[in-house]
Length: 194
Image (cartoon, rainbow, N blue to C red; front, side, top):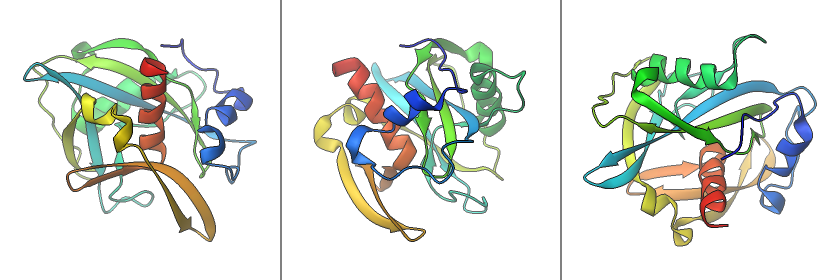
């Protein structure tokens, strides 16, 4: 894993946007908003699982989408790690004492202009989610083995807000994991196996 990415340097993040798969530049790449997410991994029955959330259908942006717990970095004094931990506690009740930080994935620049620092962590087996229902509709686990199987990594094309977009997607049962979340999982795969 990397050390914390420099979110003030956009150029490496552009390169990490998943190569030629997503060719169109973000809407506001020159002044991105900084955010951080936690990529929480925990043991379920002796197997590693990744904890994901379904965003509330009442959210003004990305409603109902599958995501990692996380959100905006609140001001220049807050680090990406602190933001990921704060947001995870607010959204799913995951206290910082319940995680062991492993490191960072590549920063990811979204098509909507967020520069996201993904923090990978191992979660204590005693963790039991408590949802912030205004932000999170559901929390669930996906086996890491499923997410790291390249046969489950699809590339989709879709028109979004008048722009043709290409993005990674992974469908687990009825859950459609796509966009930034799938891209960060693909980056995790590349780090482990690439």
